[in-house]
Structure formats: structure tokens, C-alpha cells
Image (cartoon, rainbow, N blue to C red):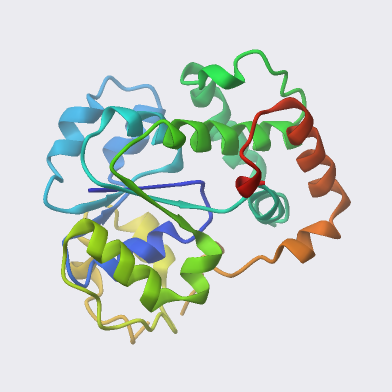
Length: 239
């Protein structure tokens, strides 16, 4: 069972909650070796986690249509995603460079004829490439990140029912250092690192609701959204 996502939308937090009821892993190193160009068989590696949850890097969304296992897709709409990514204070250029070249080798057919000729449009491309591959996928539950943040219990109950696993009882993520779990200890089952969700400080920048009204006041974001509407066939509910 796998978690796919549009990036910076709470996927590590989601995996951490699920680790209460099922063994869960966040971005094992072999995932990033694939992105780096190493010859690793994704299907074979992913099958090692057949009875677990594995949260994948957002760069591997193009594998989703090939996978029959149940999948969770956590996403922000385009406005909220761009607002989040373009307002990050650190590493936004490293992030763009890390994924852009890899995505060019795994581009969705709907995006091949479109010219993404500046950094803002490249961020649109990254989001669209993830979205379109997941729209081609089956056996999937799609979850809006804002819905997850606003209604953790209801959303997680729906996810657990879809996955056919027992429901989660603890919904507190106050003082929880998800960054350490998700990025620094990615070879270790999450629950083995921190079995108590109440003990630990949210430092990772992915979390939080972004309202559409906020994005409307960001001229750069809205210009990119308008460009995307004119040039890419994106379902309206994802804008």
C-alpha cells in the first residue's frame, strides 16, 4: 500500500498517523536512488512493502498506474500548491532542479507539447505531471490536504476503511517532529522511531491549511494559474 502526493502537503504526517495501526515507511533510500538514475526495479522493491504503508517521494508518481495495490493520493489544488512552493524560504531551487530533469524522462503524454519556459511554469509542470499520472491510476483514494488537516479523524477513518485496516485512535500531532522521522530515518519503520505521537514539535513546513482566498492575493501565483488554465487541460476542481 502506497502514499503518493503532490509534495509539501502532509504525506509524512499521514504516514506517521497510519504507523499506529500498520507498519509504515517514509521514502526509503532506494526511492531516491531511482530518481538519481540508479538501475533499481521499482516494482520489485515496492512489493517488499506489500503488507505495509510506504510513503514515496513525489517524483515517483508515474509508477502509480503500474501498481495494483491500494493507493492513497494526497494533494493540494494548484493554487495552494504554488503558494506553498513559491513561498518556501529555503531550497526551492534545489527542489525544482532535483525533480525537473527526472520528470522530463517520465513526462505524462498530455504535457509533452507544452513549453514550461521559466521556474514558475516548471513548478506547474511538476504538479501537473504528478496529478495526471494519478488520474490514470486505479484502486485509489484521493484526499485533499486541506480536508485532511481540517478533519483528521473523519479523513483517517475513510482511509483506514479503504485500506481495510483498523482505525486510528490518536489524532494529536502537537509537538511532533515529523522532519526527523520522514527525512533522516527513512530506513526505519516509523513506529519504531516514535511510537508515542504526543511526545514530540511540528517543525516540517508541509503542514497547514492554505485557503484559496490567500492565494488570490498573490499575483505571481494567480498569473501561473491563469496560464495553466489556458494551456493545460486540468480538471476544474484541481485548480
